Amino acid sequence: MRLGAKADGIAESTGGPVFVPYALPGETVTIERDGARARLLSVDTPSPERETPFCPYFSECGGCATQHMHDDFYRSWKQDTLAHTLRQARIEAPIEPLVDAHGEGRRRVTLHVRFPDRAMHVGYMAARSHHVIEIDHCPIAVPALQRQAPIVARAIGKQLGAARKPLDVQITATENGLDVDVRGHGPLKDKDRLSLIGLAADLDLARLSIHGDVVVERRPPAIPMGRATVVPPAGSFLQATRLGEESLAGLVTQACERAKRVADLFSGCGPFALRLAEKSDVHAVETDKGAVTALDKAARATPGLRRVTTEARDLFRRPLLVPELNAFDAVVIDPPRAGAEAQAKQLAASKVPLVVSVSCDPATFARDAAILIAGGYRLERVMAVDQFKYSPHVEVVGILRRDVMKKRR
Image 1: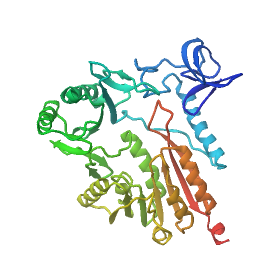
Image 2: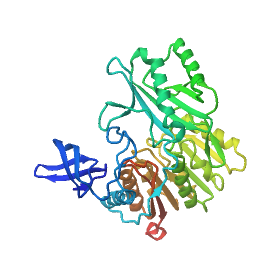
Image 3: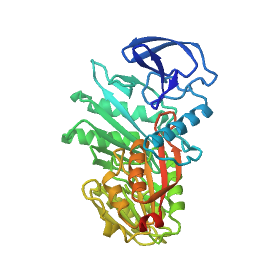
Image 4: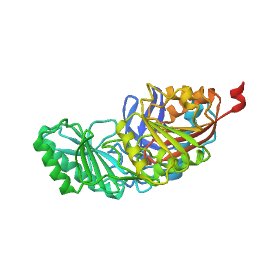
């Protein structure tokens, strides 16, 4: 048996590979097979790499996949998986030791409220299922969310339950309290809006919104980013852990420390741009206009930063073109999971000396890096940052420098 990229044990059979979640290489297990997938019934001969999971919901809740692995084995598996992905793209580069960026835990969770029967069910989804596993705490979340998040989600579900619509409740721990955005309900009636304002006071929430529409903001849900403090738009993207953001930003700013002018593409609300601006002029580009506004406001309110300019622009449809890119000493890209193929092609044709590529998906990172390498860049460093601990996901940071001699040819 070997371990796959999704953390499943993979056993070979006469009918092809069989995927067994929570099984480890070298183990003898009893399974219930259903085609190419199987359910683990028992571990008859455990691997020495097996660990006792610390969460009572592990193997039921679909949030974690690796709590049964010893830490050294887990770290090696993540690095090996990244190395295999790069090799598939014909990229050879040394991968530095995995950075543990879990910190205090996840600062944002999304709980699901469902009404499959007469009762309300609140929790996380089971793996590869729409079935809700009810929880009363989440041990991988920051302390402010571990027990409070299910309480908040249940209260909101109870308040909006008359419609019996499936709700997704995103809860973020901020400096000034919990920031809650609810998806799935649709427009609110006036009476529902008033009742939610009262509920936000009862739960002492910083902000409560529905589909990004703010119902009430009792305190600004502030997130520190370097010297700056940002109030992100309701429901907007945020790195999963505070230490994860700081670790990624540290690698980015270190790589760009000699650059006078930096473009931060797919900038979000500024986790890199605001830190880069402590030493460099920064042009931040992001699709989400709300995130751009939040970044600009934070930059203007923070003394001591260099010049920060912002632009709302869809980089998938309108990537920065070569003449625009050539004005920068360094470019940082941190796209969504789909990657930045269109932007990578423009960078490959540019004269930008340094590209720092940050990605939450090793496969699209490798694809985009291969485009840059073909255009004359050299992948100098690859770092893996583990902010999604206990999951198969890993953040990747690549430092690519223009090979001047190759470009001249």
